[in-house]
Image (cartoon, rainbow, N blue to C red):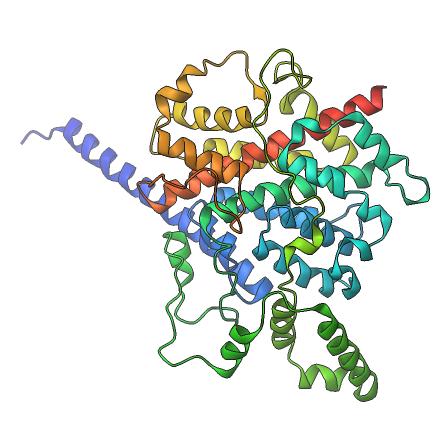
Length: 443
């Protein structure tokens, strides 16, 4: 009897490859499930952004790590300042989802409710960030050395260099996140998913997030009293009633003691009430609302010249500067850029690079070694309009100047494009801000 070892090796090799691929798929699903479990344990519900990103768990992990570091870990800015800066950034694009989220977090870390009335109520150190917030959000090429100098030399209300760098990173992070929220439709319905005692939304399986199925099954019963109360609240309610409620709560706390109060008012209910009351109108945090994105000037006679990556790049200049002034953030941001670049894409890698460079074109950033004819060849018109709308006009409160006419092949592909938009925009804002800081330092 003759045994053909070659065929056996081939079949065994095929089976091993199949098992290996299956293990990789299962590992990715387990990673997504673990990340979702952490988010659920943290807030008692899976936030919309994490749901959308769960189809790309490797990227989601680096995103959550960076965001947590910026908002909660070591840094020169107090926690309440960080969340208020996030409110200011999200308000430039009228992103109610992020404004409400960070307003609630602002109060939880000890922020003064009076500050949520608007920029007039905040300390000058925060109010002075309004101009650079506006510029970075809409026309980052206007960022100049003079803006940095004004923030660092404003008398007793000046910022330190470390504080300014953290503020700039936070502004750019939230501006770009607004694009993702807008592109994914997360801001269209700001009502949060129901909170349950053990943190898992009813009818929701953690494995669904790994599979890209993020929809929650609705409860068969009618709306509860709490849901009716949530819907009846006006999203732009005045904070005077909120302050009055907090004063009454504090008085009751002093009378009955912390332990008794914590028993009568469960923490989950307090957090729900905070988020409902913090659905403030983003316009109260915005000055000069007419200031928005304009086409970058490309004519030679214009004052603003093209930003050439060969002269100032993230890899050669921005990374080292931001990492030196704000410890470890350069590594975290670089990990995000690398992860989004390495995500599996159903189309050619050339298409991904075309999308990235096309987004940077909106902000006047050019690559001398790239043939921009590839953009028109690889990107269909509907996709180009979609990218421009998400990158430049992420404001659901206004009629979009660029229609969202692109129809992706699947939900994961749309999330992938939104991630590219977010990261390319983040890097563009950082490049302009860090270049201005460099010019200030060497002047």
